[in-house]
Length: 152
Ligand SMILES: [Zn+2]
Image (cartoon, rainbow, N blue to C red; front, side, top):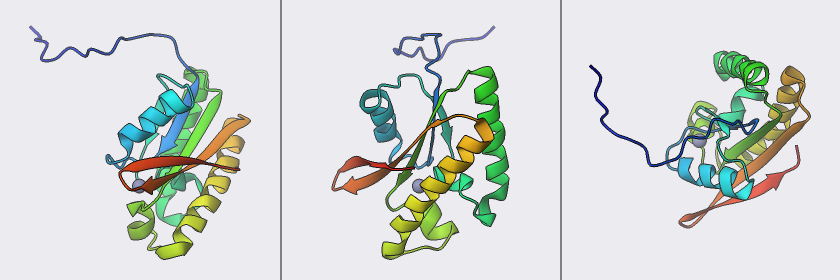
């Protein structure tokens, strides 16, 4: 016999929104990303693709070749099975993936992250065939996160 240990108060709705977001798995920004996507972009129930560095894995860095393959496979699945039509890419300030795994620091960091959003968007469009790919940069402002649109 199975025993329920918890019942979520969030209502389950089976319809899909046909949008996915690729963002960093850093738990300190997860709820803010969720709020932005659901309230700021009006994308409830969007599909999540979360991994360290988020869209950095689609920007051609050799350090993340394996992750790149995994995310491309996942996007392919989402297009075929979930009818994906839109992809949102989010990079965030002070991302440890960039500072530790790619060893980037200071002012150069944000420039690389913004360039990576452009590269990742082009790659995502190519592998999925989708046109609607959007980029955002999440900036830390004290205790708040502000989302800036990035032309990709
Ligand atoms: Zn991060």
